[in-house]
Image 1 (tube, one colour):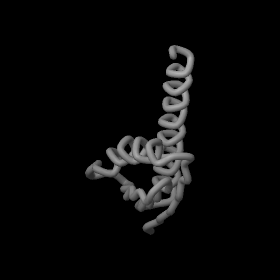
Image 2: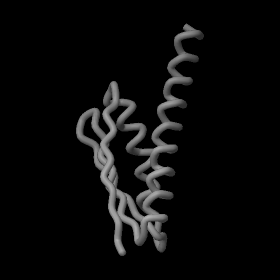
Image 3: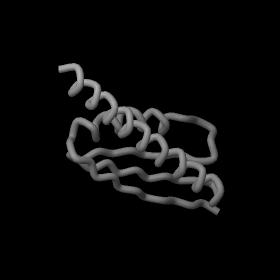
Image 4: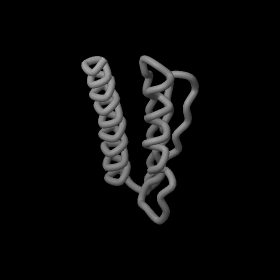
Length: 87
């Protein structure tokens, strides 16, 4: 049974949204997996659609996507913090 999930992420700025798009967009290029994702950006909003062969694969893909987005946000915050302290 095919399953799908759509998630929208709203960011504070377009630059961060683009960085997340580029980072997580790479995951949508995988082949022969139990799930696939489609990533689209409009301004400061990132839309992700995940399609999976079953609920377990959908949950795994969604958890991975959420972790990747969170990681990119954390890295961006760390970099910006470092820039502020070194200026």
